[in-house]
Length: 199
Image (cartoon, rainbow, N blue to C red):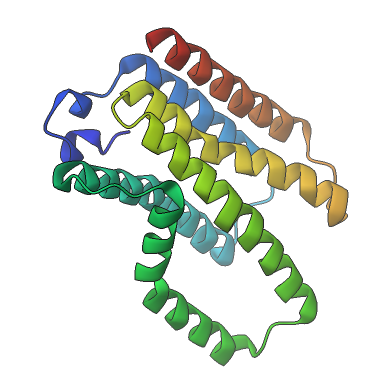
């Protein structure tokens, strides 16, 4: 949403104040979920992971917005599945470099890692991404609704927290993390209400 003034030249370049306030609430929830891990300080690897997640959280919707804008300008029509396939195809060289580096550093993955990666690839990489691209394509001309669709990324943290406890025997999240999860969920609900009222 903050990149909109640099992407658009029409009315969509304005950042809606209500959407910005709700986004700050959601980001606050994300922050509480991260610091709510029991007060442990982040080590170097955790900081690297955090930076990677933040870059991805910005690059993912910006890439989608730029693709939608390109299709709008050229008049081409691609559905959500075609857009996901195109962005996946274009990013392949980077993934091969990452895979080669991981193989060099750690060797081949275990069967358990392959199983987890397959589950994540199918649920988040295929199903969720196609749904995300479909939703953003439907509301591409409505800045608040587009921000609401993009904010849905934050719900992944809530699901990851719950699935980690359920399937990976992770410890029960502390109270602060639950407050963060409530802020994220409440922010998503507020986004939905505001977007529905403005349409």
